[in-house]
Image 1 (cartoon, helix red, strand yellow):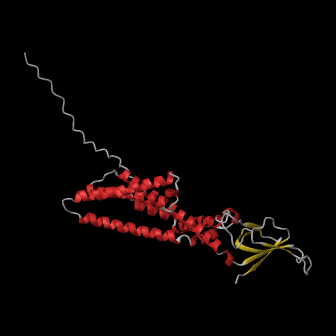
Image 2 (cartoon, one colour):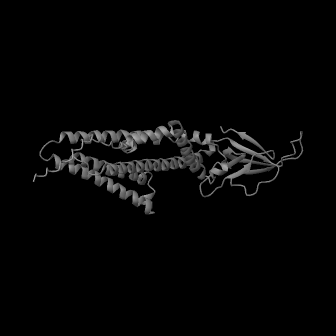
Image 3 (cartoon, helix red, strand yellow):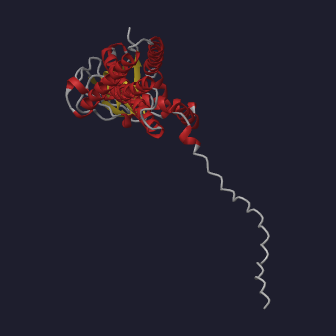
Length: 325
């Protein structure tokens, strides 16, 4: 018998063309806002606000604080004076010089301290360089922690020795966190690698900058209030040199301050207004004229003893000013 031929193998399938690689969707780059340094963020914020707007707002605010303290010394609320924003801005011009000078001096001091620290870090290259740099960082952080403690004591302990000293609490609040952040930066330079993650470092720096600005603003407010109180004391000491104000009224004024003389005017005379005013009061000094009101005081006005007389300025009174020799 003839042998059966073995079954033929099916022909091999032709090779498939290679599958093209699937292109992965491009990854979205990280937000550029997370990569910007703190200085760039602060500069962008200042550009968004606008220097003119910021300067005008600061002048109005400092003028408001100083003028409020000045007239509150005489027991006059600022809301009663009716002063406009332009008046407050003009008042703020004389207040803003000292805070601005202190701010620029502080910036120069910070630049000098940073240059000194950089010089010390670059100069110290001996065997104990790492220990010296770490000690410098620890000292800066310790100073910052002590200042933060001083700020917390001044804010939460109502004591005259800690809370009333002008600028002590707000400046401690401003410098303390900044010193801690700067000490961490010095320690990072000594360590050679970041101590904190980039996001945590950025958030900490932003918090330090925010507390620095808040502390400076707080200190400037205290300085403006002290300046206004000083202006009030100066006004009270020089009232005798101001022109004397003589008031003619139709109706009598009750409760005259000490030192004011009243004279009964004669109804006879010429003209329609001759007999319209029946009472004359002499000896006043003009503290302020605003909002249709006259704020009058005596030349020897003393805080806690005398008061301020407020008269509406209208047709029912007549005012005369007598300059002093």
